[in-house]
Image (cartoon, rainbow, N blue to C red):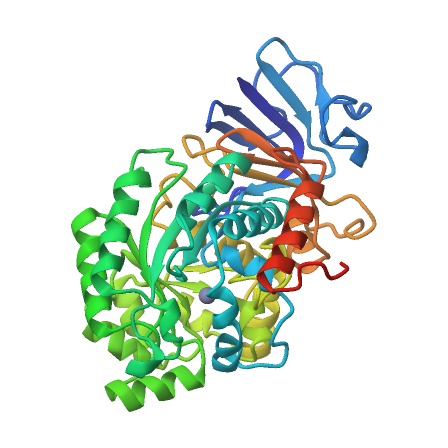
Length: 481
Ligand SMILES: [Zn+2]
């Protein structure tokens, strides 16, 4: 199958920052085969706008991408009024938290966790599936084609939680990098989480290796790669951190954890380890170009330089950091030091919107609150959400920019409606304007969102299941919605 998109603006986010005011993309199978200015080569007559297709599950939602007459095996789409960018890459999330949104509304991180851990202790595989479907649908419909999940709560008897979310991602068509998380430092040993949500260290390592054996696909074009991801300095022992790193490196998979999110975490590390969170991780052999770390709000200049020298990447989560009042990560300094920086929505219990598209704007705004109006440009914000995220996941050779040979993960954003009309710069319209409708989202060449609607599942069914599951988890079965 060949898919041709033309008549749209194109922001390739390649190394040269190539953009086309009006350009084309040609996709064959799961790969991009051509990107350039003007109409696609040998594409026939120039596209003219026509009526929206009447077939398909989302046709009633309003005009979608306009299909043009094509020959057999070729779909041609009129992208006029739209901007094509790489599909967004989400570098940090906790899908299960979709069911516990809107709680602990005025809490800081430690207060918020302390309130939520006992709720999360009741998680099971059915709840995980419902949460995963909802959280993944929110990502897809906001232009995100690749996401990680950092799952670290494995209550005894909860069932196969990882299998539930892997199934959800496969069914919805998301490119998925689930991180097998873990906690082994319960409250009785000086950690923050209650003992009932932590695991035994050997069990964690065995389950993590089993997840790699079962699901990790290192092949080009992979739809699923596992990472190893103990949760945080205040919920994991140093022994597990070190052994997790050794496991990841032995198996050739990436490493992920939370770091330097709040001042309370820094105080915890200074008291317990006599150093900053970044120094603690360095001591454990955790810094390197196979590691990406969520948050990194509270880093000193020394840590920023050390991250740059070691190639350690950062998943910046601006909305979550604002929601929990954690602070603003030093993104401008990280970029200046050569640190790969991607974006993350973080778990939906600390970012109830759970959409990646709006994080482009949020990243730009908080960077400017910290560093002034030139701290981050609209194009830098787009790069964080695309190629920066691909670098965090070690997939910049395949994802994060629109270039021939790369995977056909493409977002086509509609920019000719009320919200964006009149802004001549489409990248500024996308980043500074209101959330843009995703006219088309391709993941490996497959259309998973069209006309702003999910095509791989029913949003109504997903929402219904999320509502019922949230009520069950929170113990309010029988209450009115
Ligand atoms: Zn997180």
